[in-house]
Image (cartoon, rainbow, N blue to C red; front, side, top):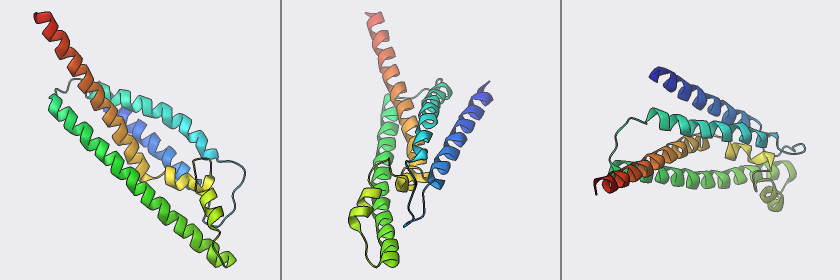
Length: 170
């Protein structure tokens, strides 16, 4: 039974990875005009559902693991730090991506149109941003966030259990 849970978690994480890499592959090359809309946004629906299942799977797998509140808190802080660092890294990569776009525009048209570059690299609706939202870093940030929610759940559950146990002894 336990092996089924591990296999389910592995398969779910693998499907999430495939969807993330598919979203990344939908990014047009720098300097290329794109069509209407961003079909990769539709990948957020199955990713959202799979993320919820992933959190549930982590909770089920780690259900019987006894953990001191200090350990849970430390893991939560470490995972939050990882997510914040991943976000900062992603902002840095966005600046680099904008520079790549500018260099491509400059080589093709003789000058970089920064207003256009800012408009195509602003928000999730632009197809040019797919490689910024769907990549290895954001995948690992998603896994880390699912673990963070799992450990947060375990910490709150443990606190409630201890509170109930203390009130039952009175």
